[in-house]
Amino acid sequence: MRVFTAHTRLDRNPELVVESFRWGALFFGPLWLAWHRAWIPAALAAAALILVLTMPGGAVRDVLLPALVILFGLIGNDARRWSLTRRGYVLTDVVAGRDEDAAVARYLAERPEQAARLT
Image 1 (cartoon, rainbow, N blue to C red):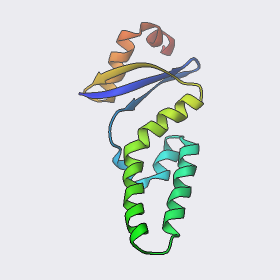
Image 2 (image 1 turned 90 degrees about the vertical axis):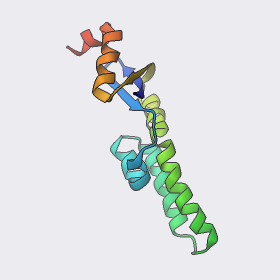
Image 3 (image 1 turned 180 degrees about the vertical axis):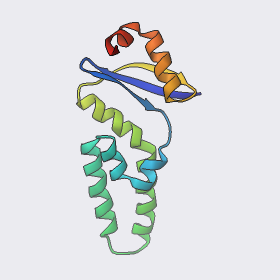
């Protein structure tokens, strides 16, 4: 079972964000964040990546670059949650499910007012 956090806003469908390491954020970093509309974290991640990449080569750069990329994978979904909060979403529930579809179904079963609003 995977654990998801459910974020809602009155004028939007609920957004579910999984609690796990994000391989997409590891490999694509700022682009992955931008894809998920986490604009401020994407800009900060891009700035950090450019800063590290423009450092002169050496031991410090060889340590910082992999550390930064791993950090993107670790905090990718936390950055998404932060961005959702900034856009007016509220954390309403924590839901477990086999996959995202099962988690959405479980969330809507537990919150019939959300299901009624979506129809």
